[in-house]
Amino acid sequence: MTAAVVAPGAYLAVGAALFAIGAFGVLTRRNPLVMFMSVELMLNAVNLTFVTFARSLNDVGGQVIVFFVLVVAAAEVVVGLGIIVALLRRRPGATADDVAELRG
Amino acid sequence: MGKLTMLAEISGLGVEHVVFILASLATLLSAVGVVTSRSPVHSALSLVATLFGVAVLFVAQDAHFLAAVQVIVYAGAIVVLFLFVIMLLGVDRLEDIETEPLVAQRPLALLAGAAFAVLAGLVYALTDRDFGGIVTGAPSQAGVLARSGSQNVTNLATSVFTDYLYAFEITSVLLIIAVVGAVVLARRTPEPDETSP
Image (cartoon, rainbow over all chains, first blue to last red; front, side, top):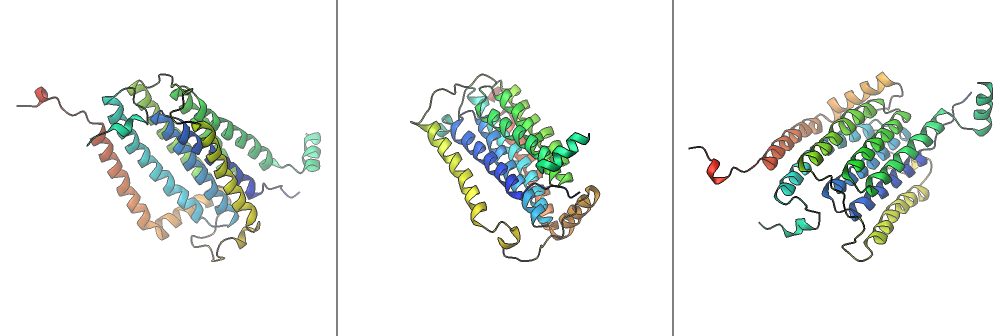
């Protein structure tokens, strides 16, 4: 019995929807931490797309890219949360709009 | 047992279809939960659910190593880091998500998000469904994808440590830079009367 396989387009559609939800979150929320989490959603959508193409093009390079995206995302979260900690320590109730008032 | 097999044969649904539908539903519903929760802690927990859903989708696509790394690194370290920061700073106060700083911000954001999704759908629909035709047709640079679990790790490791060794070393430097940067950023500047004599 041949196994039924899900078309790659379905995975791409899920990735696109995930990306759209993340974009909506970045554009709408003002809490810097939740904005950051929405960026992580977008990164996950991209990872899913890469893995889908790795499978359909039969190229492990897609998975290598995802490997590096994971590493860079981890580094980005570390630095970004450091910035948020430095910011919110000075002004506890800060939102993304208040960051515009930073002065050198 | 016999009835399920007959049902599967009639409807054309395989195991992968069922796994895909369940995991996609969980992922997308949790993602909506991330962006609409009032409390950042609820958003972080929904993010964990989303990451697990994406890991299941990875497994369904023969990316076993990446699924494991996703759970360990993303759900196990990054989200925990988020929760640490939330608890450290006490920002788990409920956000006021009713007021809009810009006029019509939320409908415009919905529009932008929908536009992204439609764009991706158009790219898929207008290009050749047989993916061999979209890209340049050049042979795969990084080697053939392997289906079974242990071969997947072997192929991925061979690729990373031979073809992409330079990128690998650069990312290790990047991680060190990130750690140093975080320590410097989160350091408390000493008060004038705290300086050592």
